[in-house]
Image (cartoon, rainbow, N blue to C red; front, side, top):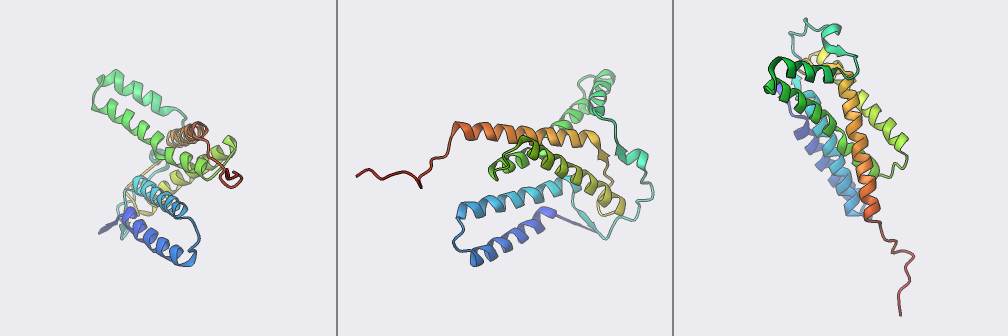
Length: 194
């Protein structure tokens, strides 16, 4: 069995695209190319994080898959989980692991919010819809790939959806504020002093 590293395959595709784009569109600014390549690299990293790699051939032992175990639709269940871990074992490894996983779910789509701000999605509502859509697509992809045996068992978790969306909106808002601190200068309309 092989586990395909999504980032490695994605990096090869990005380099191929970068070279093709460089040859086809010579006038495109280099910074825009690098920014787009970094966005693609980020997306491939997200896919690697949510899948853990793609299994070739698919895992055969997926007969224990169940809706009850792999779909969690109770919002904010992670808070009860944190309280439960703390009440049973204090600040043990289980508690800190639950905190870490929640924090990583916030971080997962934080860069997406930054990229949306860079790519001039000017409405908070529009950015929120895009972020929640991407988060929903990622959660759905996890469950489909898991059910098909292409990844280790994963679950659809509404808390992941909420925390991913929170992270994306935090990234969007923070970068919008940073852009206000450093306004761009319009050199096209500036007159040259003689």
